[in-house]
Image (cartoon, rainbow, N blue to C red):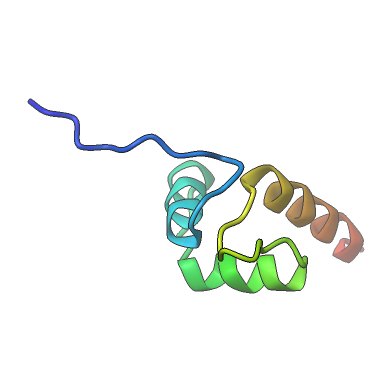
Length: 69
């Protein structure tokens, strides 16, 4: 049985790869459009259209804490 998964760089993920990673570990559906919206709002999308998943997670955590009552 072959393994066709390609290694990913968490410092330069395509939005679709970030969505797949977050959905697999987050327990809810996440789309590339959702990742792009968050990356755009957090101003963390790089010029080449990729993002750093660590920066994305940090921004999401900050956003969650700012919007909690």
